[in-house]
Length: 399
Image (tube, rainbow, N blue to C red):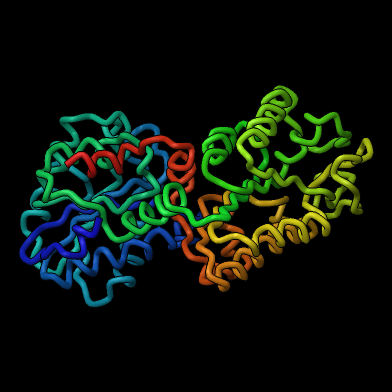
């Protein structure tokens, strides 16, 4: 899979799909540049070879064509700061005469950032004519946007059809994401523990069912744990519960038992009398929560149990927090799990933090450098672990 590293980009114009969909504040300033910095290694490799780079991305969800707050021009200054020795230019369109002229005149060692792809509805529709127009901007295509790999959009999948097999490839970020995901899903050393958290069973049902064929242990935390307790006839008070998923939760427990996979539910919880930072709190067993109280974090016994499982593991996948970690009173469970995953990694386990709130948590507790890999693609990583084929990956692999 290392076609990119061995490719010599000298004299080539590389059309690179990046995921620069970064959060902006009311002053249109970047509040988290993780996705931009993640693409820099790919950009620099091309430039160092003597190639030039044409960057295309989306930003936000513009509904009715061009809108100022979704313009990639707001990222230009920061991109220039990330590439201080490089001339970085901007095209006010992603197709059209200005984009083509600037791409045509781009010299080796220079970077051109195109305007937001989603200013055209054709992007999300996967329009072939639009994809072909984009393809004419570069000599070859590099997909480095794992965060959008689950979308069959013009710039993430359809465009690959207009390049020969040897002229389309993954960038370094995409390659690392795919290798890490494949290692966990297809080549995991056992014991393999999946830590699944978050609010709803319905959001994670497909990933849990797919992991029943692969994991040895599945730890379930967060709001979804109470659906599993209630499914067994337990009292969960006012805790979050999907009453229409109780049968499903029982089915999962039975399938796990049949497959020899151990499901670990939190034996106790930090409970609160309301969903608020200033709530009254206490600790009690997760299967005996009084009415009027709700579980908002895993308790100390659950932390001890889960930590023991994690420290015995050789492969760890973590997707979803253990509680409402955004509130200080309910962050102990998520923080303790993060520390346990970091400790297991230090002991030789391979750990993948897969998407969304888990990434926010690992960053909040400054442990990103203590785990094996932190994914940049929330939805994409989730769909990958559900067993789905991602269009952005398939488009490159089919040659």
